[in-house]
Image 1: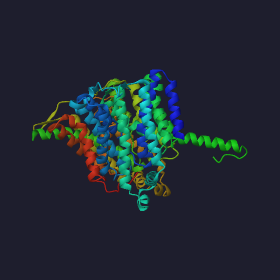
Image 2 (image 1 turned 120 degrees about the vertical axis):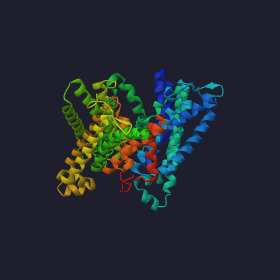
Image 3 (image 1 turned 45 degrees about the horizontal axis):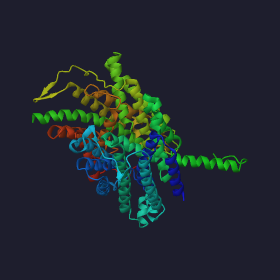
Image 4 (image 1 turned 135 degrees about the horizontal axis):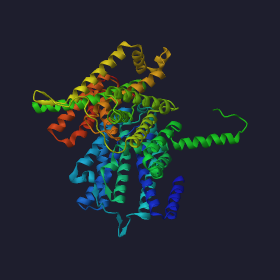
Length: 317
Length: 291
């Protein structure tokens, strides 16, 4: 039901907005939502941190970029390659990595992300190095080009809706409960008969796939990719989206992604002071709403409702 | 042999810097269980404030050194007081994001204060290279090694011989138990922030003459410092020093004998390798489940 309302909202916004800049912004929010959704499954539900998610984002973008520009392969064939390659890489990374936990896992994924970044920058023959990869073709469905504007907005958000549905189904299933059990205590989960290693690898691959699809969509939207789009700070930004929106909340992911996409745009007015304000906002949200915005807003709502109902009883602090 | 020695000298110089950054991490991690992503920004602030004071305002080097370190330590204390202490539910991920926010904030401040250009400082003393067995050694390298050695000895003295140092170690072992025994653990955390920020700034001051310093130099140094700390074993002071030196030497060898494109990759490849093979680090003994 909520999904339908959400789809309706997406549709209405899509029909209502005609300013190309706004449409592009909304499309970016969609792409970032995909990234946040994927990481949220890993971080919010399974409790496994990843500080290298930009690597999969980049893997998706560069795979399709290289295949379509160097070998003029069809983008849709490239998408299949993206999915296969990401599954393989994520599986190989997850296999040894997920034995670690806490900061050690964070450091491991960070190292992986940095190596991927260095590869994107250093493999000049394929990736174009620092100057980037130019001329990635626009997507076409049969004779129709979905290169930009409303068509691309619709495509991106259709993918987001699909991933939303997948996430919601997973979260409310046996696997979702297993994930939350792992989040709370891995040993207890294992004792209850959950194959923790398998589920952790599985969710890592899933979240990597989401990021790779986001990369695919990004590459074909912008038609130009350079390593800086996939550096360490981008990994951090994805983590921030998840945490600010609210961990273990599918809706928090979209909130976090929207906020962190729009914030830099709003901060343009500060020009040179942009970084200062951005850093401050990040710290403030975490200090005052450590549960994330989604939960923070819900809490405020609950509290005000209680107050409204029983105005005579003092609040419990 | 001569080539090897040359790479060894340059490696050990960089390694000493990584070691001191890693020491700063380790100190903070031990006392608070926190990984500080703003550590690289302390390094940057140390380097840039020294350059401003020494080169810009012609303050004598020793004074400029002390003022820079004290200033950055103060910034570290302010960060702890305002941003870390005031968190109500200190979940590790929340704290990590706060330090990331702080690092972006500091970088923004530095960009306003020092501009986007890189700056450089002259060497601490005369700059005629020394000849050692056919390889050249810059006097600045000797300064770096000497000062890092002094800090390590000082730190050992502080931990082993002073009451405050022992109290801090007690906090590292068990904060709550230390608090019950009458150790003001909150003040110890503040002290740890000051010391670790100060150590970061010393790292920055030492490399100011051998690299270009700019507002965004911190991130890479911070990550290399991480690698060094993980390599030696997170939480072990000797591990941090050993990891830093090892990382510096291997990096220099990799660049010298293979390719300079490898420079940054080596640190992270080593990081992955050590995490796969021995997550507790080369000198670490503690279990890897600490979060």
